Amino acid sequence: MDLATIIGLAGGAACIVMSVLTSGGTLGGIFDVPSLIMVLGGSFGAMFIAYPMTYGLGIFKIIGRTMKTYDFGEKNIIQSMVAMSEKARREGILALEEGLDDLDNDFMKNGLRMVVDGTDGNAIRQIMEGEMSQCEARHMTWVAFMNAWAGLAPGYGMMGTVLGLIGMLNNLEDKSSLGPNMAVALITTLYGSMISNWIMIPMATKLQFHNSCEMTVKEMIIEGVLSIQAGDNPRVLAMKLITYLDPKTKKAVEAEVLKD
Image 1 (cartoon, helix red, strand yellow):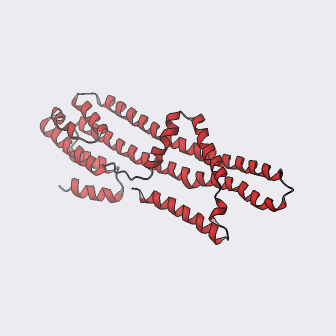
Image 2: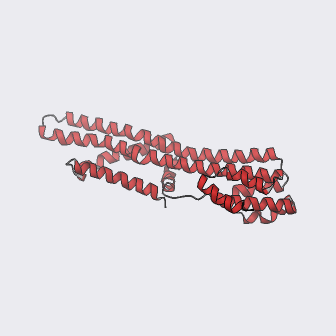
Image 3: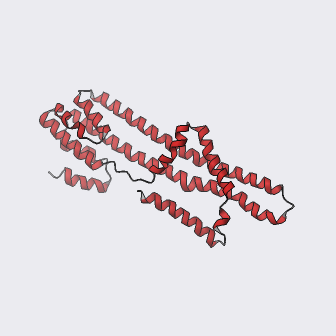
């Protein structure tokens, strides 16, 4: 569970509630079902026009991903790569085939399998970078989906406000209802802004961060696979891969992998 996302959502909700209560309002005053249907339902419906149905139905699973933390196993990958490199130099490239099925990372497994099969280094890089590019494209499509929803929600909020104002102007003879009707009309604008700036844009940014971390790991794997294919010294391979790590993790891995 990603506590940062939970804290962000809960903290945003708490700030909204505190702002309402400290300004003399009530929570009931900012809750309006027709406005919620207009903004949330309307903007979500528009996404079915913009994207295939599979994306509209699958977005809630993707939203769930922002609630999770991901460990891409950089430390284990480096250790596995170094061990593979040592084995290849000691027993030959073909000896790597024996341990491929034990690897958890399919991207690394496929790359090393190409090395064992004697595939040219340039071809390996091209294939692996192509797979990485397509993976990133799929991720960014979901990010674009959420950003598009974030862009539509405020527009539906404004449409709801306009509809509310039209209804209010049609009943100007009832002076006592002008204030409440105006408040309800403005609630849709509030909902649109909340969906966009409190939920969709931050979640899209979190997904983009996850994608960036995963792509960095894939770049590291490509570098390691090609290093093994080229017959680099295991220590040189380790030093290449360690450069992809953040300073704190780098020190820990250096102490373990480069301890000799």
